[in-house]
Image 1: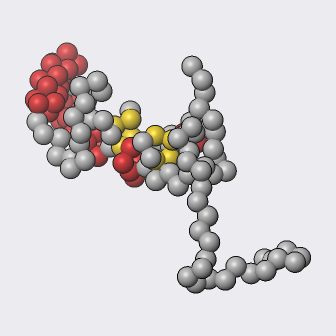
Image 2: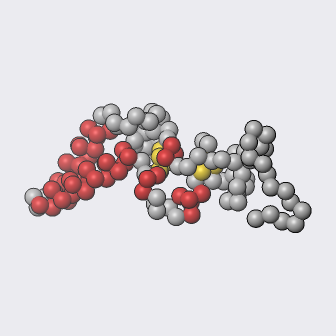
Length: 137
């Protein structure tokens, strides 16, 4: 919609491209990605979840079903799970984007932020209407 006295922008070789300011100072910005949607509704977008942790959760759920079917006592089931989990931690995660990081707990990946894979978040295109300055301190 044109406002009074405004000329339409001509499309073609001489078009102007609007470049947004960088959003590195935004509280939702993380490594070139935007956490806004995840911060707004944590867990809503299943596509943002870490595939390794999702696989582990499914494996754990299956284990609990089996333990219940066999009538295992909680202490016995815990011992078996601890052994299996220890074995899983030594295996390759199977994720092509896994970047080892000794500072994070399992799966020990630089791209894992709690249960979110940072690489699955939408790319930050720069400052937008959701820009929120990072808190100091």
